[in-house]
Amino acid sequence: MTKYVINGGNPINGEVEISGAKNAAVAIIPAALMVDGVCRIENLPQISDVTTLLSILKEMGADIRAVNKRTVDIDCTRVKTMRATFDTVRRIRASYYLIGALLGRFGNAYVTMPGGCNFGGMRPIDQHVKGFTAMGANVSVKNGVVSAETDKVLRGATIYLDVVSVGATINLMLGAALAEGNTYIENAAKEPHIVDLANFLNSMGADIRGAGTYSIKIRGVRRMSGGSYSIIPDQIEAGTYLAAVAGAGGRIVLRDVIPKHLEGISSKLREMGVTVVDLEDSIIAQRTDPLLKTHIKTMPYPGFPTDMQPQISTVLCLANGISTVTEGVWDNRFRYVDELAKMGSLIRVSGRTAIIEGVSNLTGASLKASDLRAGAALVIAGICARGETTIEGVSYIERGYEKMIQKLSALGVDIKAIYTPDEPHLEEQEAV
Image (cartoon, rainbow, N blue to C red; front, side):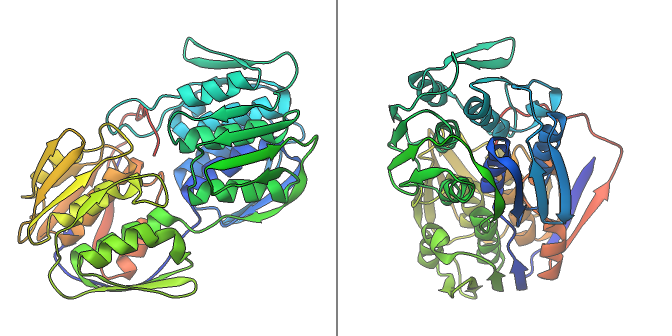
């Protein structure tokens, strides 16, 4: 078991290099199953979700070779199984992308129901099932295993998603890339990592157009061959460090970012009195004046991302006046509020909305992370708070943030990891 210990209350200053996007990596790694040959994936983040997915592919028979810390060569030519039913699959929600990849390659898939972060409420896969069914698959869930079977291969279809779903958009893109005929995904999600997956698949020989819009057209191809691809920077990691300097004060420079991907976050920070300057591939953020209240509603991209909701809510605990944060994507993502209350925050949750009354300061406390982004929010709270904060459940945080201790230490944060006897295995239920 590991816990973080933070002595906070001071501004942060320095530079941060942003890692490859977690949400892109966990889609692109399963996509390697569909490639006939070696694909080199560069700029992979060093996080546990990536390690887990690579282990899953290896268990399925893939040949995986590390080129360096952020680059791997994956050859799935020898993978013959349509099954990913071992315990490793349960650890992360992104393993459900194996369904689309296996259906695309073999026409059948048998995948253990995945796990991940639990921030309250189930994440249904009904839109995934709807799409695969339209493409000719018979999908069922029995004894914790998703079975998706076709006569031979998936067939192109027109699919209208009832809700904008990132997971369904990705999974259906995977299945359609090698399907017979054309597939149209309407009301598709537009997140940067969806565009990144499409670019990866296209670089391997797929024919996908319209990624990043509400309408995606995929012309199925017979084969995808090998190649090299570099993953985009992580929008949410960058946003988390922007939130940290907003809460603690100081000045930071984010390196290796795509500022356009952060516009929804940056615009709200500017409303809160934070100076945010966009450069070509970096961002400068500074706060010296008191934080101002604001009102936020999370929405699909390019709106304010749900994966930044806990972090921004934590920062607003220190803003002058009353702010509101409305969760427009998930039914319940406020489990971390009880932890912030231990630090002196004043937050009242009503349905999907958190009403936040700013306080002059937070006080260090003993906390426990309940999911990935909530864990990041508690780290920000610890940085901003006076005194010592301890955070347990940091295995959630390490699922999505590369070398957080080292990066924060370089910004002047007094933070360290304390190792104690092993904690029980986390039976995770959902991923972020």
